Amino acid sequence: MSRARYNDFGNFLKKHFDGKVQKISVHAGFTCPNRDGNKGYGGCTYCNNQTFSPDYCQIEKGITRQIEEGIRFFSRKYPQMKYLAYFQSYTNTYGETDDLIRKYEEALSIPNVTGLIIGTRPDCMPETLLDYLESLSKTKFVLVEYGIESTDNRTLEQINRGHTYEETVSAITRTAQRSILTGGHLILGLPGECRNTLLLHADRLSQLPITTLKLHQLQLIRHTKMASQYDKNPEDFHLYTADEYIDLCIDFIERLRPDIIVERFISQSPKELLIAPDWGLKNHEFTARLTKRLEMRDSWQGKFYKSTPETK
Image (cartoon, rainbow, N blue to C red; front, top):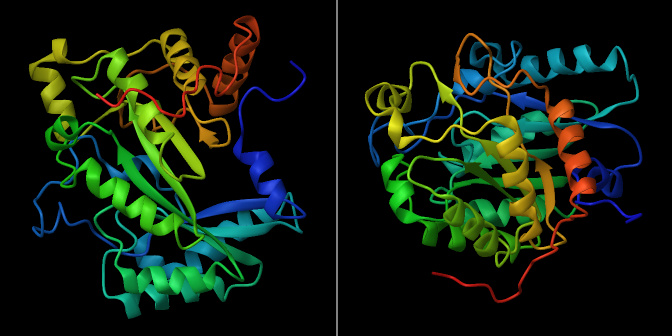
């Protein structure tokens, strides 16, 4: 095949921007409803926010300083770079609408910041905020990224997500209906989910109006409830080898709707926090291996996609 074997995020951004663009993570001081007692305490069983916060991304610095430090870092190599403020830590639509808008607008006021990526939960998207984001998306790049994690309600309950898959469907549908770019995040390998369940996620998500999708392997992180669960019952977990996971990702995207942008396949947690699996691969190294395996298997995104898949 001469065409790309899956839709990658880099080419997606090229369709929206003339030059290079870089995400800059922002910690804006949010929490989550399953941490503050609204729906529960302790957060998701797998979650330790330290695993994806860059050094410059510290709440005490404020939004403007975090972004400016990020820009200084990246602009040394690419002076003409444009930036997307990535509201990443915790639930970035959880709060009073006026306060949320003030934080977004602060980020957008910084020179060369040309859009927003907002990470959030499906149960934390009020219509008033969608009104604002719909209007903003007419002049700025706006991508709302929902933590889906699983399409199985039993799994969602087990990992203490505090929302259902039906709420995911509702939030994604309501957002996409506003012509707002809508993304999702899925963890492959959560305890209790067999291969068939994981592939069923691809079928179900393909029926939703999502633009982008992030896939992450399950990682066991220190100081999380899931790490304690693993210590007590390791037989409940299947930790994929890199080769196993590559084949799983290929099986997954073969059933995925062909136009969905696959933003990434893995995440990388700091070694001092990571318990397992430790593959010793950077994102680009993993992607290179996956691309080579796609070629060996003569496979591509959507190869086995069905517009009306099995739903049970």
